[in-house]
Image 1 (cartoon, one colour):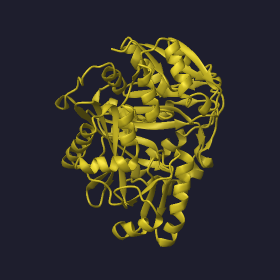
Image 2 (cartoon, helix red, strand yellow):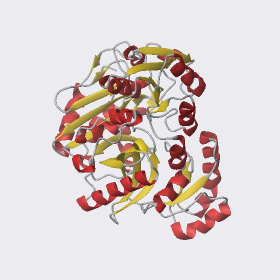
Image 3 (spheres, one colour):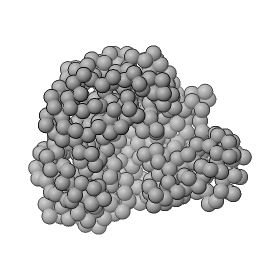
Image 4 (cartoon, helix red, strand yellow):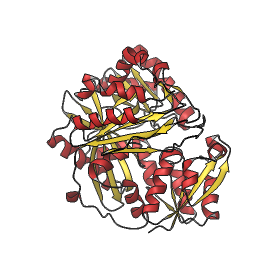
Amino acid sequence: MLRKLLVANRGEIAVRVIRAARDLGIATVAVYSDADRDALHVQLADEAVHIGPPAPKKSYLDIGAILQAAVDTGCDSVHPGYGFLAENAAFSDAVAAKGLVFVGPSGDAIRLMGDKVAARSAAHAAGVPVVPGSMGRVASIEEARAILIDTGFPVMIKAAAGGGGRGIRIANNLAEFEKAFPQAAAEALAAFGDGGLYMEKVIGRARHIEVQVLGDGADAVHCFERECSLQRRRQKVWEEAPSLALSDKVREELCASAVRLARAVGYSGAGTIEYLYDDAEDRFYFIEMNTRIQVEHPVTEMITGIDLVAEMLRIAGGEPLRLRQRDIAVSGHAIEVRINAEDPARDFVPFPGTVGDLRVPGGPGVRFDSMLYPGYAVPPFYDSLLAKLIVHGETREAAIVRLVRALAELRIAGLKTTKPLFTALAADPAVQAADVHTRWLESWLDQHAGTLIPDPET
């Protein structure tokens, strides 16, 4: 088992990792920027090391500073959380080169599955269905035009090294395509340092389904699926498990394909294999793999009873998989909503500030993962995620009722948050019926955003 862990992140995920490590008797070291001197993860860790100014490039993305902090404090391991360096193959390599354990996959695995084209090829080789499109990078716009014969319109142009919804364009006709292709290449180059592109057919009423996997490099299991179809600008806002869209037969095939791919690439740690599910054709297609713990991992923990972060730490410490597929089962239904410091009535403009009165919801089946406390000044330099509200019930209907109750209890004075969005969504008939797809929320927001009233205390 690991002895001392450096948590190379901030916010609620740093708090989450510190708590899992403490449960296993592992000492923890936090890192922090100038803006995070008073952050909760700094207060909870056994030790904390300052690594630079607020700008992420000079702190949380500074591999040298993070590794020096790990060495200076005698750590034997590093957990990257999500975001920042979590899917950076060079960081994984650098941790290993220092003789430390990277809590996650190897740099080679991150490179393979982090490149969307390479991952698509690996999935195809493992017999996992992929969305119709280019089988490799598209070298030129002339080559791209030839691929249109197979994909037709609409078509999606995507960054090969992309993530987070960036470097993506959708073209509905040839004129749009001619304009979008160079735009996507330029955005990909600016965002990821790699202007490579590939193409996929756009699935009409697609649902976003993802499978949680755990691997130890030799074997892998799945912890069933999550549905993340409620998205804004390709960013997830509401996640749940399991998906009501899937039949038992499709669920079994989907999850088996994820395990097959994880085993094929020798995956180690917690990972998520993402798919589009075509409602009309009752078919699923691989789109990418996230080689890290996901923001939405708690819904899987709620329905399976498995502490995914603890399992990551055990695997990284050299233990083989403790879990067998036959022992992993689903109980009830879970929903997670992301409480961001944003004003949903004003196009989700960020709203940093100082937390006044804080009332955290509780009771049966309610979990609140956050880094908040009264008096905490939310810095403007990072992602606006404040907390994740997760609820569990025997049925999806019961989970939604519990979500409404928990949202009513939640109070974060001093900030505008996305809480009103989720109160409204929970009351919407389409959401209650699970009759949504990946483009449903943006259409809904066009009609309802102006009616989302912030809490009176903000």
